[in-house]
Image 1 (cartoon, rainbow, N blue to C red):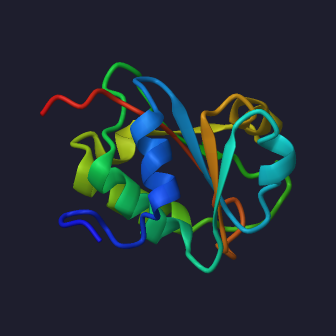
Image 2 (image 1 turned 90 degrees about the horizontal axis):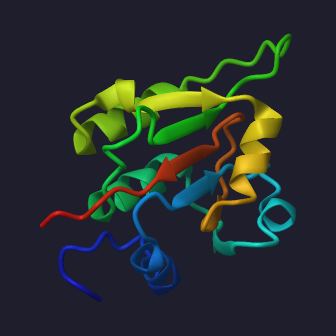
Image 3 (image 1 turned 120 degrees about the horizontal axis):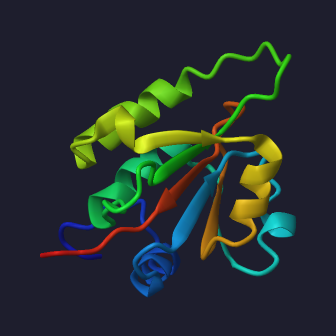
Length: 146
């Protein structure tokens, strides 16, 4: 146990976050995200039983978002014609606003298959038990200035 570190962050995930450098990307995938096949060339950290919002909150407690890009947070766009709603995105924007002064302006979207392509080049993918659909989020790491 460590002081000041959210308990949800496992030693494996903390190691991955420490290894990442400026502009490296981390994907937090929902329960349907094909982490093992998309992440063949990156590290996959399993966090089954946890939802994306709580993991996002914990990660942003210790990892800054990239200040040098317009959208250091990317969400997977809903496919055209898919009637699904994405209220979880509002939760993400609230979490992000607690950790980045840009708030919702730090968030962009990426077309579904482009998201998979970019996720395959991420440093790591965190796979979760999140049941919301289109709940995948990609974070670009910033510079620690403290």
